[in-house]
Amino acid sequence: MLTRALIACALAAALGVGAAPTLRGQSRAVEPSTSGSTLPPALRAAIDRLADSARAAGVPAEPLYLKAAEGVLKGADDDRVATVVARMLAELREARRGLGERATSAELIAGASVVHAGLDAATLRRVRAARADAHGENALVMPLVVLADLVARRVTPAIATESVIALAARGAPDAELAGLRSVVESEIRRGQAPDVATRERTIVILRALPGDGRLDRASPREAVSRP
Image (tube, rainbow, N blue to C red; front, side):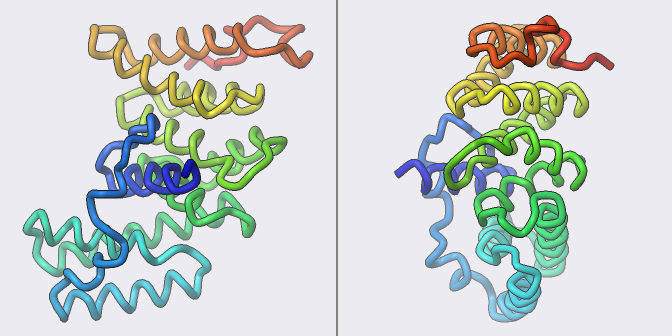
């Protein structure tokens, strides 16, 4: 199901194991049903306390257990794991602040990945506003995952943000947003500068989208800000 794939995509981005907006089975890395049981008792108690705080704040707790399980798998000590998980909780709270009370768990997880990339609640609010006309659950997941992934690939945060917002505002479907990430990744590997690759692909997508009047008065290039 697409919804489950989007949630897996958001979790993968938040856990730092690759955003992969092409939606290829990331959920198999750590199964939610076993994530807590794999933790040492003392660490489990610490994560339980953080999870209680997450629930009180209205943000999903499961990513905290997944992050802790990932840390244990990598051999990190308990204190280090608890510190990283506490940081993730702060990122989820910031995501809630930016995305609002109606945001789904998947959207909050994806928003936390954007915060982890160095952006803030104000940026999340801009993405939410750009996608305001979108219908359906988890409409913000793909734009947010792609935004976090672009910044992780050294696209200037302002360029990444404006590109994603320009596409979201024009109603670009998730497949086009995923295509942005895919093409930018490919062009970077071929030696193109991340900002240039992002701008050029964004312009191509914008030109292919049906017009809605907003770009009748401006060229596609003007929809993507420059530093």
